[in-house]
Image 1: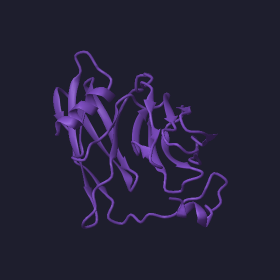
Image 2: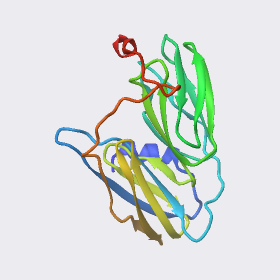
Image 3: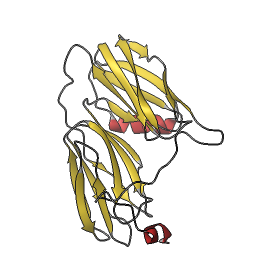
Image 4: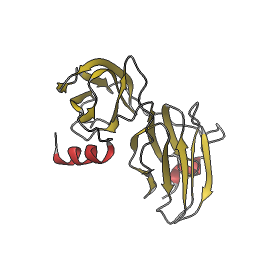
Length: 217
């Protein structure tokens, strides 16, 4: 586990006084020459409801005609800000069931927000620039993290049984169950991106983007 990954995890995860530790690594099968996509991992308690704990506000910037970061894992109820850090207009939207939204057109320097009130996988786009895409996983639990390039992750959480879920923008979700008691290592979580093929998406009206949108510098 790299120092960068540990630093990110420390910032994102809720602190549990006297909590046990659950660690693991997600492995990803990719095509030769490809790098794996970032992975979101979250832990749901079995036999009881996850504690209701609102996540800290998060920023998903628009910069250089791209979203940064491209992938986010957040607890349900988290407010995500979408600042426009480019010198052009953007229009952020999603058509994902249960989390569809449209922030409308806004200029450089402006920022808009969205509360992710329902659990689910939310694919986010810009209605002007088809190359812009992001993935937000709104998890029904406070224990959620986005892994680094090494796939490593860690949770500090109460002892008990949990269902683990791992998902990336290029692979279907995989799950595993684990019993946490003291320092615990997760069962294997392995994603398969080897069959992923990028496909064009529609604009917010469900229509193809105009050809000129793909030719913008």
